[in-house]
Structure formats: structure tokens, C-alpha cells
Amino acid sequence: MASLKVSVVGADQEVWSGTASMVIARTVEGEIGILPGHEPMLAILAEGEVRVTADNGEKITATAADGFLSVENNTVTIVAGNASLVK
Image 1 (spheres, rainbow, N blue to C red):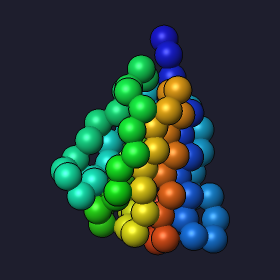
Image 2 (image 1 turned 30 degrees about the vertical axis):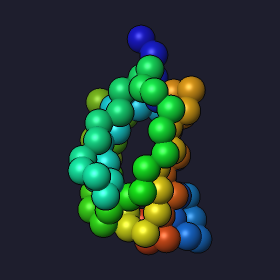
Image 3 (image 1 turned 120 degrees about the vertical axis):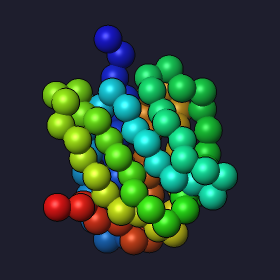
Image 4 (image 1 turned 45 degrees about the vertical axis):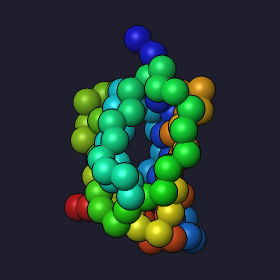
């Protein structure tokens, strides 16, 4: 099964990176779900949660604001001025 290579990066550090089966993020146009094979896109993030389902089934939640989301060739990059993991 195909996977996504995901990086969630804040202004001063990488918050999380790894392989995942799904990413859900909030953009200024609404919530979006990304699965392997998703079309290339660039979106502006709205303040909210980014939810990642890792390949091992672990659920990772991060908050993100002031940034963008990029999808290309099963690589999802989320860059935010303010990002942190939710405990």
C-alpha cells in the first residue's frame, strides 16, 4: 500500500515527520483530507488542527496557524509560523 511522506514544520523546529496513510488539515477554503495519490496542490492553512494517521496506526494531532500545505508526489509538507504537537 502506498504511503505519504509527511513533514509538519514550525517556524523554528520540525514538529513531526514520518510516513502516513492520511492527513487531514484545515485550510482557508475548508477541511481537506489527503490520501496517497492525491493531486498536487498548494493551500493556505487556517488556524486549527492537523491530524495525521501514521502508517503504524498512531494518531498524531498538531495545531498549526499562519502557514501553508503542499502536496506533490505523495509528499505532504506543512509549514506554519506557529505549530506544535497536541499532547
